[in-house]
Length: 126
Image (tube, rainbow, N blue to C red):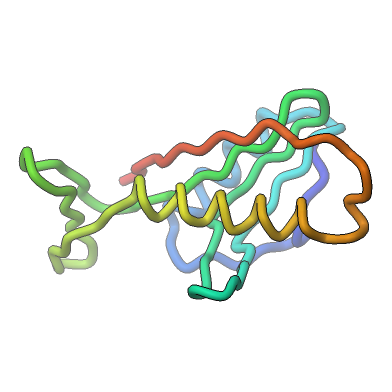
C-alpha cells in the first residue's frame, strides 16, 4: 500500500473517495497518494483533488468530477445533485499542477534536486 497524506482523508464527494480508494489499491509501497491538498500562490487558492508521487517516475495531479459530465462541442458541463453548471476541468487541473509544482520547487528544502516530471489528468466517476 502507498504512503497516504493525510492518513484518513475526508472527501467532499463519493467520487473523490472512490478514485482515491482505487488508486490506493493499485499503487506500490514507495508511492505517495495525496488527497485534498490546498496550495496558494499570489493569484488564488487551488485545491488538488489527488496527487500521486511515484519515485523515479514523477508526479501526477488528478481532478475528479462526479455526476454526469459531458461536452457540447464548446464547453464542458456537469450535472451533479440535480444542478447543471459549466466546468473547466482541464484548466482546473493544469493550474493546480503548476501551483503545486511551483510551491515544491521553490521551497528551500528542495535544494539542488533536479526538476521532477509532472503530469495531469482528470476523471469522471458517477
